[in-house]
Length: 232
Ligand code: OAD
Image 1 (cartoon, protein in one colour):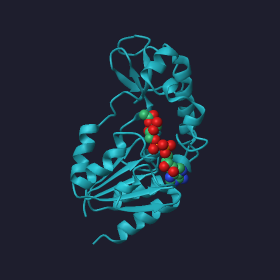
Image 2 (image 1 turned 90 degrees about the horizontal axis):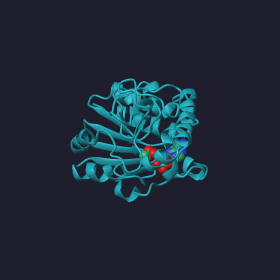
Image 3 (image 1 turned 120 degrees about the vertical axis):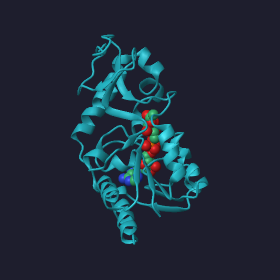
């Protein structure tokens, strides 16, 4: 076994104090997706949307990586083959935990994107409504996050990795949002062993060959230790 592809979701950051989306007290219980996570919502009320992401950016800045983020960084460092981390998370806890080259398929809170010219630059801690783009000066800055109805980032690269994967793991994701929810099937078709690590079974749990349930800070370090011990 050589190449490992890992998909992570909000559950891996839950024990760092960042809320998930669909748990009982999650972000989508308190905010409407169509208000804060769609281009139409942003056009209707940019102040509400900037406020939502400003708050999430501040929470993420205060959060520390947990044992699960650190275990994946350790796997990347000590595994003899490739370890590709694809995350749906817009926080930077994988990077803070020591991971390299993380593919943020839903974008990142650290980035700003111009809705007018497409220029990207590091986001200020607080993004104002009508924040000007440093390249074209249009007052059209938005968080560089992917909203519903928009194409996730790095898709071609991710599908190439899935086609080459020997092992695919999904960690802390509910399997309710596509295309990420379909990665397990893509990897399985290519012959990868598939494993779900989650607190509760996801919506696509039956597509996995192996499952491990529990809090990420316990089950991810255990899984990584097993993989590294099994190396020749
Ligand atoms: P969800 O909130 O949908 O799912 C979180 C998952 O994490 C659930 O399966 C929980 O059981 C699990 N979980 C909670 N606490 C955990 C813990 N301590 N250890 C392990 N697992 C735990 O979040 P995502 O699947 O990441 O997209 O959501 C996917 C996408 O939907 C997000 O990227 C976001 C959201 O709408 C956009 O905004 C485009």
